[in-house]
Length: 310
Ligand code: PAF
Image (cartoon, rainbow, N blue to C red; front, side):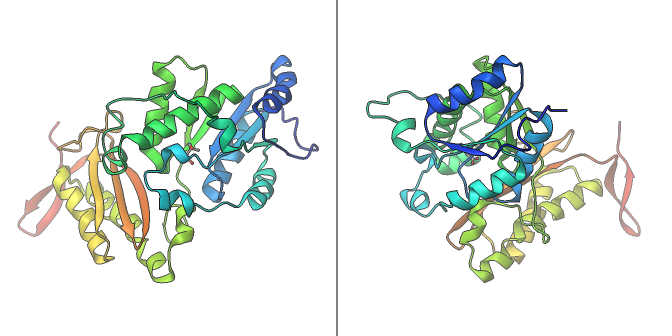
């Protein structure tokens, strides 16, 4: 339980790292915990759930808002990324933030900036394979900078970006960063679409089709619950659901949740990850599939569940 110091004090928006450090110093000296929710703005319920969780767990809640140019693989994507700082500030404050840290690009990447932080291996796959090595290098570099700037005790990330969360956990562990990473559940619209700042770009017809990603995850989950363990069958079920929504995926992959290596059979929890373009908008989503205790066997009356071999 946190000892919130914020309930009556209005949220402050800070731009300079020195201001952020000065503001956090008294809390740190008093032994209070600092939670950081890194965002690129365009806040939605997914972000707000992270802020609320940070509010529950930490004494001081910092939300960073920085559209990080280094992690965009396409200039057009960066240019059209929604920038809604005033509304973001209102939402962040209502969700319980004490400080909105919104630095300028020139302060994060001043002239002569020449360093980067890179996690190898797990960044080559899935999103890394589609978006190129620069994407995760951009994420890990800016997250390292934000951690150094705010020096949080805990930082909060969403499970929707499962690979990003894994990469950041690896980064923190490999570089002995003194920050705990909490990964919070994906927040969904009523029809299942995962909340994302990019959903705002979907045209009405595309918005309807976009639920195909969730339906694909559900189709595969259903099969796994019925006892199916073959990865290719589980992936095929997801692909069929995407095709029904007229969505051509960039990838549908069933992978080990720690290494992101493809799995052939569902023997423990596995991450089913999907990326697809719906119109001009790239969407990602994922689910953890668990092997059920039953495997499909064919009886005279058709497919029926039977006990899995030990
Ligand atoms: O998930 C995001 O919004 C961004 O990748 C992050 C973690 C804020 C880094 O820019």
